[in-house]
Image (cartoon, rainbow, N blue to C red; front, side, top):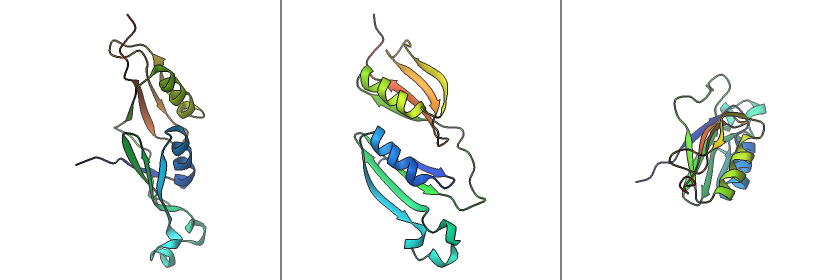
Length: 138
């Protein structure tokens, strides 16, 4: 078994997934628009190019995404996507990229379990915990 977080967006799924592809050094496996599905006749013209299903694969995980139909989106709450990153340098790089245009809730810092841990909500409204897998400095 595996778990794939399915992220919901309010019309910017494609932009978010292209950004995550770059930051996470992943590969987009699916980018399907509403207009390219049997749902097309039921979807407003301005929503035809929005995403009904996106898939992103990266080392150690995968994400799915969707643009929820107008009036149905709610901001994510009650969870974080947690990234465990092998090196401090890469941890700092990913934290910096994901926090750009977002809100840092806990700056990247040493903790009792990690040399670098931080919490943020990215510019797309997705909450992240970024954790370096190296232990704390002695």
